[in-house]
Length: 274
Image 1 (cartoon, helix red, strand yellow):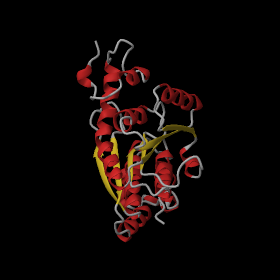
Image 2 (cartoon, rainbow, N blue to C red):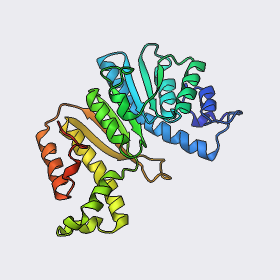
Image 3 (tube, rainbow, N blue to C red):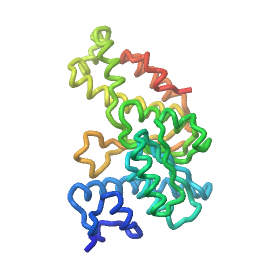
Image 4 (cartoon, one colour):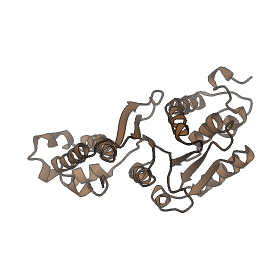
């Protein structure tokens, strides 16, 4: 017997079985229950954004970077787009060809015509003619290292109205902090990242601070919150950005000042503001 009380109304049980969230006899185990809870929690944040886009135009375009097995894309399509024919298109971007092919086959099997899966890196997708010139919503969940920054660059180029980001490990800033440590030690704040473990943690923290400032410098309103139900992940920070054409000068100045204060001037190209 399927544990329907944990599954959203209208959710395809067949899809959940195909994604191995449900066992063949419709059961949830502890691991899949946690996975489902995580995706549903994200859906709560994303559904209102999709509805807001639909107020402006009926067909929503969403790109999911680092899609993996496309749990999020499939569940979004199943819950939001499936019963609204022609209401939108989801593009899953993934570098592992075997996962792209499996997702393509599954979308065909489930008759989900508004789903496409492309074997591209996030950076490659920015200039690919396989994607529309503008995209409404961009998601990137645990896109490792600089892939979250590439997803932000993609969204900025595609003039995305919304971004939903769960940043992953990013060693680039920590590497620069480490490299410039000797020069920074005259600044008492350098104690925050003097020890290697603190360098790693502070590097991760400041990376997300810089990302938020960068988004604000492009006119976005940014909200940062915690993902409930992701207690087993070290990375449970959720960044939601909405384009509102806000004033850019102050966040641009703040971003430049933070980079200068921390000896990260060479990162200006990564956290570009124009």
